[in-house]
Image (cartoon, rainbow, N blue to C red; front, top):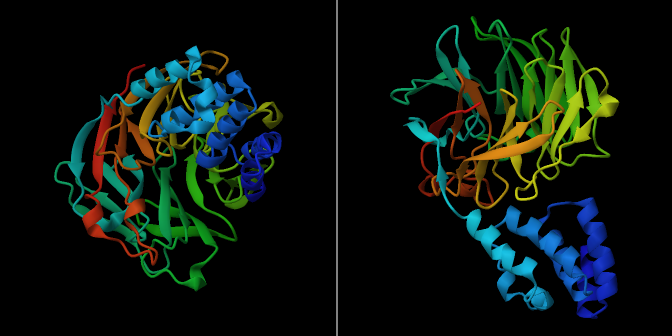
Length: 394
C-alpha cells in the first residue's frame, strides 16, 4: 500500500495519495513516514485544518522533523496554525531535569531492562537482555553480583515480586541481542516463577511463536498478568496455570508496560502506538483508550507505573525522550500532566522502572542502538547502566 501511495504521488494523483495514506495511518498509526505523508496529502488536497492537525501529531512525536523545508506543505505556511507549530516544537525541545543520577552499575554490557527493590531483604535487582540473567547491585557503589543466571535463561525483561516477597516472577524472550543466540532459540519465550529465598525456579511457563513478553504485574491475590508485544494479548497465570486473559489483536498494536490502580479495580496497559488502555477488572468489555491532552503525544510509552492517582509513563519511542506523569480524575480520565524529564542527552531509551518509598527509579540508558547487523555490541557507543531517581509529587 505504501508503494502504491508513492506511485500515486509521483503521478500527481493527490486524491489517491490521500486515500492510501489514510488507510496506512489507520493500519499502522503513529508511523513516522505514514503520518507525515498523511499531513502532506491533506495539504496537497487543500485540507488545511486536517493537515495542521496531523502535522501537530508529527511534531509531538519528533521535534527533529524538518517540516519547514517541505514543499508539499507550502500551502500551510501563511496560516496561524502553522506558526504555532514552531512554538510547540520549541517547547518540547526545552530540557527538563527533575530526576537525579544515583549510580552507574559495574557491569557495562548488562543491557538492563527490568528493575525491582525487595524491601524485606533490602535488595536491588536488575534484569539483563544481553547477558541473560538477573543481578543484584549495591546502590551506593554500583557493584553487581549474579543473582540468577544459567544457560537455560533467555533475555530477561520484566521482574516483579508477589505481595509477601516470597515469589519472584520474570518474563524472558529469545532476542538476537542476547549472548549465545542461534536459530534454535527463535520464537522461544518463558515466564519463570522463582523462590526468592532459595533462588530456585519453581515453574516455567513456555511459549513458542511471535511473542515478546515485555512486562508483567502481580495482583495482591497472586495472579500474574503479562503483556505480549508480539501478539497483542495479555496472558494470565492463576494457580500455576497460564491462559490468554484478553486478546487485543483487533484493537492494539504493540503492548508494553502494565499497572494496577491502588484498588486493583482497573488495569492500565500501554500500547507503543496508541497510548494507554484502561481495563475495568469486573467487566473487560467496558475498556477504553484514555484521551490525552492535545499538547502531548500518545506514542512511545514503554514503562507504565501507578502512583497516587497518576500514571508514570516512560516515553522512549519519541524524540526527544521524555518521562511523563499523567494526572487522572475520579473517572480515570487524564486531566493534567507533569513533565518529569525531557530532552536529556544522557537519556538513551530508559525502559521499565519501579516505585519504592514514593520514589521512581529507572535506568536511563539501554544500548539498543549499539548493536551492529550481526548483533555484536560495540562498547564504545554507550555508558554503563545508570540508575536515576525522582521524588514523585502527588
